[in-house]
Amino acid sequence: SNRPGKTVLSHAEDLIDETQASIQALYESKEVTLQVDCDIPRSSKLLVEPKAIPNALIAILENALSVSQPHDTVQMRVSVDGKKLLIQIQDRGPGVASTIIDSLFEPFSTTSANGTGLGLSIAKNTIDAHRGTIAVENAKRGAIFKITLPIYSH
Image 1 (cartoon, helix red, strand yellow):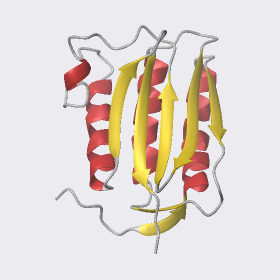
Image 2: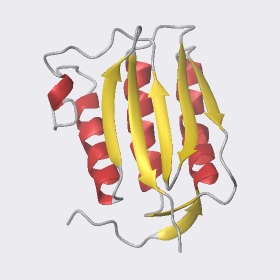
Image 3: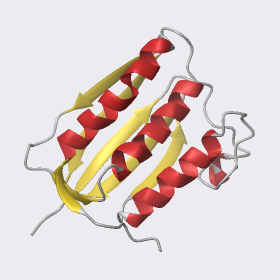
């Protein structure tokens, strides 16, 4: 089923902190900087399956790391847009080839040996199950993943 299991009300900020804490060492080992800019009200809460959202974001951040060079920066910007949490993850890699950009979130769409294609498809399934959206576009340099998740309101 595509529905999350047991859901709990969580502060969005805590989920972002958990994501960063989980992946920080991996970024440091590759000498890539993860810059997190999270300027959201403490009242922003999400109804989520524990671990699911951090795991989805980690998959996207791992993908960003895999296309980064030492001394690059990956940015994760978190903001609130009305009733949605907006998370943008931007890398400085080569961008996504036009031939695969439409199938990027399908299992095994990428040819990379490190299996990031599967990670991205799992991330998309998680975000879909939480009634969110995920899209990717190429920037002047690198790719930007844009994720929205519904903010819980009574």
